[in-house]
Amino acid sequence: MTILHIINKSPFEKNSLDTCLRLAKRGSAILLIEDGIYAAQKNTAVGNKLAAAAATHSLYALAPDLDARGIGKDKIIDGISLVDYDGFVQLTTETSGVQSWL
Amino acid sequence: MAVIKKFLYVNRKAPHGSIFALESLEVVLIGAAFDQDVALAFIDDGVYQLMRNQDTSGIGTKNFSATYKALGDYDISKIYVEKESLDLRGLSKDNLMPLTWEDEDDDWAEKDSIQVVSSTELAEIIDNQDVIFSF
Amino acid sequence: MTIELNGKSYETDEEGYLVNLSDWTDQLAEEMAKADGSELDDPHWEVINFLREYYEEYQIAPAVRVLTKAIGKRMGKEKATSKYLYELFPYGPAKQACKYAGLPKPTGCV
Image 1: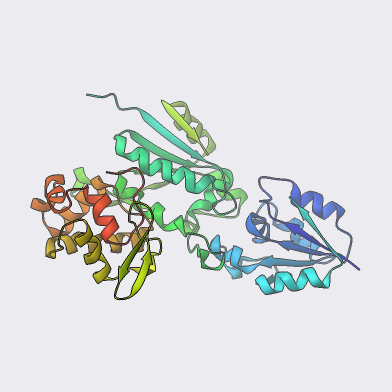
Image 2: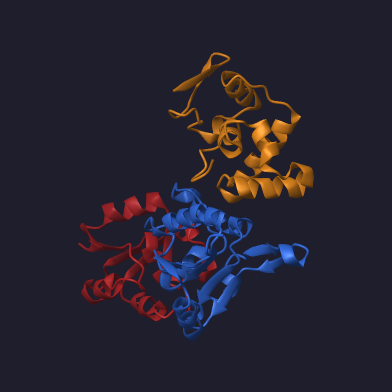
C-alpha cells in the first residue's frame, strides 16, 4: 500500500514540494499538476531536488499542464513519467490514498 | 492637458494556476485607453506568463498568452523581465515570446518590447514610478 | 436570449452577443444587423472580418483606438477615423461590430 502525493503549487512560490519530499515515504508516488509542473523542468534552481527523488519515488507530471505552460517535453528531468488525465485517474486507483500538498 | 503619469504593472504569478495573470492583463488593456506612460514588469513566477508555445487546449481554459502579443498595438512598449528570475528558472529571453511594438516616430519600425533587466536596474525603474499595480 | 435562423436557435447573452464563438456564420451576422434595423455592406464586412482575424490571432477584441489605427493601416488613411467607423456602426464601432462578428463584448470599450 502506498500513497499518491500531489503537488499543484510552484516550487518557487511555496514550500509544498520540499515538505512533500521530506514526508513522502520511499516508494510512494509523486504527481506534479498545475503550477507544480514547474518543478519538473531541467536546469532550474529546484531541479536537482526532483532528480534526486527519482531514485527513491515514482515521479509523474500531468502533460496537459506542461503544454498549457509552454514547458516542452524535452525539458523535463529524466525519471519523470508524463501522464494524461486518464493516467491521473489510474494513479489514484492504484494507490491506497491521496495526499494533496496544497 | 492632463498630466501623464508613469504606471507600472508588477506581475509575479504563474499564468494558469490562478487568475492573477489574466486579471492583470485585462486591467492593463483597459488602462491603456487612458494614454498614460505604461510599463510592465515580470518578476518571480510572473516570467512564466511570457513563455513561448503555451497551449491550453488540454486544460480547457482560454489561451490568453496570445494576447500579450497585442500589447504593442496598445502602445505598450516597455516590458521589463528580471534577469535573476529567469536565471533561477533556467530560462533566457529565447524561451519567451517575441513581443514587439511599432515606433510611429521611426517610420513604424518594429522594435523589441522585452528588456531583460537586472535586479539593480529594476529597482531603479520601480523607484521612478508614479503608480504601481501589483498582481 | 436566442436568435432563430433556418430552424436553428443560437444562444446569446442579454445584450445579443453570441455565447458560442463557433456558432457564427455570415448569415447570422446579417440576421443580427437586421434586428438592429441595419444592413451589412462591403465596408461593414471589412471591419467585421478584420475583427474576427484580430480575435483569432490575439484572443481579444481590439479597443476602438487600436481598431481605428489598424483599419487605417490596412485600408487607407481616410478610413482611420472614428467618424468613419461610427458612420458604419452608429451604436459604437467596437461594440456593434463585435456583436455582428460573433465576438464577446470588448472589455472597457465603446
